[in-house]
Every structure is written in structure tokens, then in C-alpha cells.
Length: 245
Image (cartoon, rainbow, N blue to C red; front, side, top):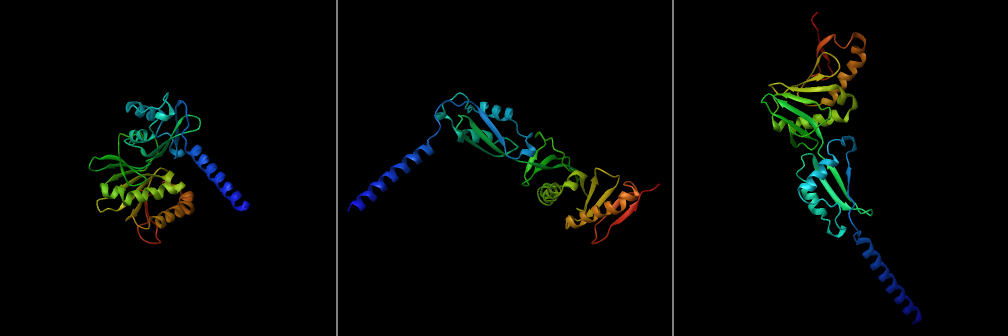
């Protein structure tokens, strides 16, 4: 009987403790909000979204939390106010123990700049979405020119640009992606006065590996300006056109 009573008391104490702990854990920090702390998750591209832009949007929408009681801070309203920013993919706002509001931003990362034959000028982000040319973009991106429509830009060309960005060598080497009228592709490199003809945008990893191997075995010996055109359209072949003297 005594054992049962002790177990009941212990269970009651444990339940009260858990209730108090849960209440304390969920209690919002009390006090006055001392400001906004911006965290850009994509640190490599931290220059795209700035704290000044964030604060301007919060003030414009009258949801700047600075100086407010932490109980009256509206994190949901802040996230809604930041949603229209053209380079913000997602924003999460929450109160910190130091009485600040932390704004964590995931960015829309431009990976391709399109300047097509129709006169259009826009960026494509890492999820294949269109960004207007008015966005502030300081990254060195490949430029897609020629017969590029939006379907191609946000599909095949987006995937190709992601591949280039994943490879340190080609990310630095490819300056321009030119799409010809028959939808085949040629590349303008940053180093070397030649054109790389890929043909169709398929198996481009193998094609670029052949070019890279040719660079190492041939161009490093004969010079980077000896050929005007390097074609890897067909499997296991590298066809070069000598530059006219």
C-alpha cells in the first residue's frame, strides 16, 4: 500500500515537473526587442540580400520590431512582408533569447543570365525560375545568347548551368552559352580564343570531359589559340579546326 502511494506521489511530481518545464520552454522571451539579426543561409552569395534591404522592407510594411515589446512582435507578418523580395526564396523570423528577432533567409540564387535574340534580358535561378534583369546580381554567371526561349532557359539550360556551377573548372571557364537556330549549343570560354561546339545538350558531362582532356594533352603544348573551333558533338571524338594564319 505504501509503495503504491509513493509511486502515485512520484508520478504526480513528475507530471507537474514536465508541465512546468514545457510551459517554460514555450514561453516567449519577455522584454523589449533590441533589433534584427540577419542570417543568410547561402553564405557564398551573402552579398545578394543585405540587412539594409531587409530593414527597409520591414519599416515600409510597419513591422519593424525594434523597440517593441517582445510579446507584440509579429514574426508571421514580418515573413509576409519579406516574401516579395525578388531574391528571397524563404524567410523565417523568430525571437532569440537575447531579445532580438532573427531573420533567416534562403536566397533565390541566379545561375544563368539570358540575353536572347528576341531582346529578352532576365536571370534564371537554381530552381529554374525567372528573375527580372532588375535584380542586383554581382556573381560571374554564364550568359545564354541566341535562340533561347523561356522553356529552354528554365529547363535544359538551367540543368546545364547547374552542372557547370558544380564543376570548379567549367564554372570558371565558360563565359557564354550560345544556342543556334537548330537548338545545338556552342560555348565561348574565358581562356582561349576558340569555340567549343557541343551539339545537342545531351551527355554534356562526357563531352566536356573530352574537352578538358584535350586541353591538358594538346593545348597546353601547342597553345590555346591554335584552333578556332573544337567540336565534341560525336562520341569519343575531338574535331578541331585550325585557325587561319
